[in-house]
Amino acid sequence: MFVTSEGPILHADLDAFYASVEQRDDPRLRGRPVIVGGGVVLAASYEAKALGVRTAMGGAQARRLCPHAVVVPPRMSVYSAASKAVFEVFRQTTPAVEGVSIDEAFLDVGGLRRIAGRPSEIAVRLRAEVLAQVGLPITVGVARTKFLAKVASGVAKPDGLLVVPPERELEFLHPLPVERLWGVGKVTSAKLRERGVRTVRQVAELPEAALISMLGPGSGRHLHALAHGRDPRAVQPGKRRRSIGSQRALGRRSRSPAELDEIVVSIVDRLARRLRGASRVCRTVVLRMRFADFTRATRSHTLADSTDHTETLLCAARGLLSAAQPLVYDRGLTLLGLSFSNLDSHGAVQLALPLDQPSSPAMSAEATALDSAVDALRNRFGASALTRAALLSHEAGMEMPMLPD
Image 1 (cartoon, rainbow, N blue to C red):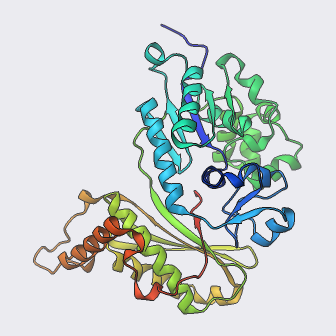
Image 2: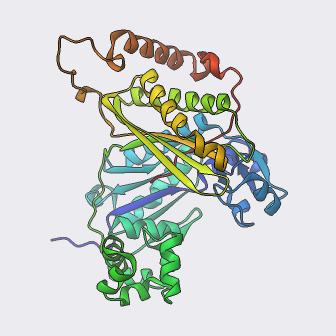
Image 3: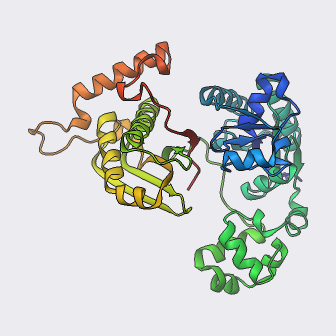
């Protein structure tokens, strides 16, 4: 059996993606601190990050930290096109690509050594191709497992390449802070640091039972395995998303019911089009809210039948928002998000029984024809070619990507 001294998995992660696209397209922004998004920071260049600006930070706070930053509005369609171009480079490199988000992916290159060279050589060419074809910097981590490859890319940022040989995995991993472990957020980090556990090595030195007692069975076993370099998950090419979503930051200003309804209409309209474009249907609509006191709430509704019908999904979303009105007015809504989950392929939709009853509105021929006609017009003439009357004066918040759960 042939044994390589390098791991077969690459984690490729675009650097400060939205901000890098803006710097690519406007040479005047290169080398300058750039903030994407005004009310809430959607992305910050590394020049802005060096002064403390972070994603999801309020715009006013970001400008105080970095008063000389150039603030630009987001261009989501441009970012989407850049992402598609980068993923095409990934697929040219290997068919085994698992997308994680719009700007990162895992690539399994374990079977390419004879035709493409060592994983590190493939990573070098990948970075060069992304820069040449798309004009964007990208960082790549190379390791035996997905976890270590992702940690390596995080350490190598920005615009770097880091290879973790199998025989040096623990030497690389153990000095790192506990926050580098997947699943260690603010709460878990605080629990560990309260007990004097600050590095991955200190996590590895704890018995599994102690971690379970401290963090619970799921997190305890998970972190114990990662701290010892164990991660059996394989790259899953073609893995389909379990949900899609979008959210709007609203700032501190109070919003009227009509303004909130405009936001819901806008998000549902766009997400339903994405569903149909991917030949997917969903059964569950989820409403996510963040309030002025930084608390959060989630409400969901599961439909009787899976659907991609805009009006059916909009009706469910409006119902969720209506039921949440007491919370909205008591606490002050600062962020509103919607997601569609329980996704399935369009062909998986079953006819409702009994068959002699009229079909549901979600699956009626008229509803399907209307949605298809609207999609066709927008695909041909652009997304803004056809707009709902309710959205003609729409300017109710700043669009943000829905963060993973």
